[in-house]
Image (cartoon, rainbow, N blue to C red):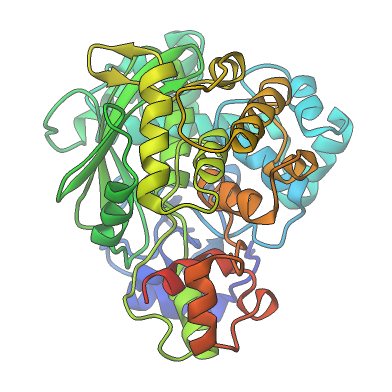
Length: 452
């Protein structure tokens, strides 16, 4: 039985036979004779076609009774595009579960999505053939397995970081699913440099230098630091503070981190995957853009450089209205240095509450823009879960500001900033570029226009 969305069994066969890295994470190969499932790039001897079946996600393979390969470690694969085209509510549910939002009740998650718990169960049965709780536990255990392989975090801390409330429950669930104990899995790992490291995989290409250049020009003093090899920043996540440093390795980002609450680690990993756009399928994206506008893709591997959240992106966008990048960053540094929580020279991005309570008199910009920023802060304070699209109801916020917030704060792929000055200049050279023609990759078209 094959469980695929967009890929045929013939395509999967060719991809696994050639170990094509473009398909890493897009499907998984299960071997009937061993009960193991692998990434298509696994270096193990290739099984006969009659002995394999293909799955579009790890959860489906695990649910069918297969165990992850200890050699290629499917839990470390780039995330899949298997759900592309599925309904938005289901996609949001997957994202929230990945962040640990189903550690509580199903009713709470359903309420967050604005649907009934019955309808949520129906969605998962339709798309995955399993209940949400089963999917969530598989994700917890796959995340735990990744931590056991790629970090020095103790097994007890791994249990809590992956969402379990006791090590006994964790050990029992882990052994039941993988038929190995956490201790046995940990023995298989390579030596690691320090306690708090993670490896986050991606499908190439990745122009890391371009991303670092983009961050460097817009870095906030005391909060972000960018050198020739790495990006690092301080952050607030939930009730705790933290820091991370991202550096490029061969086919993954190496993440060094510190955080007060390891229970928020899944949130951090999901945030970093989005910030650095690690799950983008650039082979397909760049092929589409280059076919549409030959010469547009001057450098390959450009991804969306995200920021911490939509609130930060919205502040950056408001301060950047009708001014240069340099002027906007000057005002942003003033805002952060004046309002943000700090420890010595370390700074954290100000909260909506901090901005809303200030008169912003220290900012050197028109009063109307200050009022816009305060309105945005008040709205986000009262409606923290709303999409930036809702901000259009606020005076002073137009489509460009919202698109920019979605582009960098949510890493949405569809944001083609046709109102941007540099994009307008590029459109004179590439008139075939329209919001419709570049869909659904408008954000990437924007960055390629900016690179000209």
